[in-house]
Image 1 (cartoon, rainbow, N blue to C red):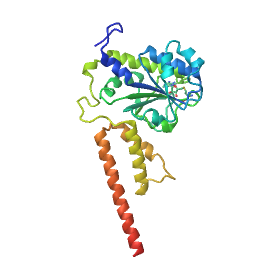
Image 2: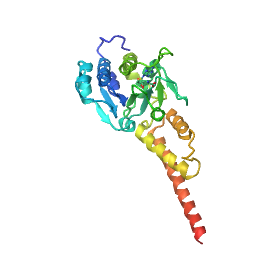
Image 3: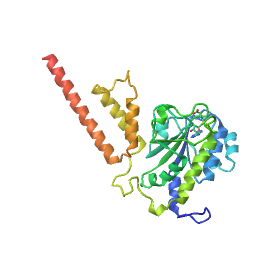
Image 4: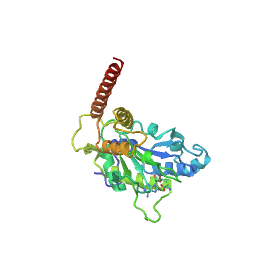
Length: 274
Ligand code: SAH
């Protein structure tokens, strides 16, 4: 147990902080990119990804606000979509200032910090903390790509923090938790050594696409009247901590359903022609 920031820290702790990516969606003020870089560097984080920024990224304003954390701005990767920014991540958490219509697993900032060392334990693990636009936050679709949401408890009448300030609060909680966790003894998600690596965001997205196509194909899902079917299925599967083997099994089952439904359609066609 490390209880002082001045005690030399084992490499394992840094590996965990290295596994945490901060993702900013559609940022419109370069100062917030710089402020985020500074907040991250203060807390020992380095991996910054930007999704479709709406302002200049590498210019003087963001560098000025980064004050010394310039390298994080220079190294920030720009992506066209959230999916691309988190495709290799095994745990994705969306930061939201508002409560949404369809309830989603919620974490407090402290619970998020406490959970991260476990989530980051598997070798292929990578976690992302996603933040929304200054003016409109994250869309429901973006939030539904996350395993969980985190809300910083603020004044309910004035709940929205400045973007870089929100990054600072959550990055601080993550650092506290990492400092307090015994890196040598970090549990895996279910408290025991697991046999397969967790599925990545990319695996999950390809599965959701396949699932949706299949449900349309077998007339279970009507894309013209979708209700919240896919959102509810996303919530179900994102809650379960699927590993890569389980993912393969589910894809295999869908493949078998597709094959049967093609065979059935061909038979019907044959009957029609005969
Ligand atoms: N006006 C927007 C909020 C924008 S603040 C809205 O109503 O949604 C920019 C981003 O900072 C948010 O998308 C969120 O990721 C983060 N943020 C701000 N306040 C937060 C809070 N109280 N809890 C969690 N995240 C917060």
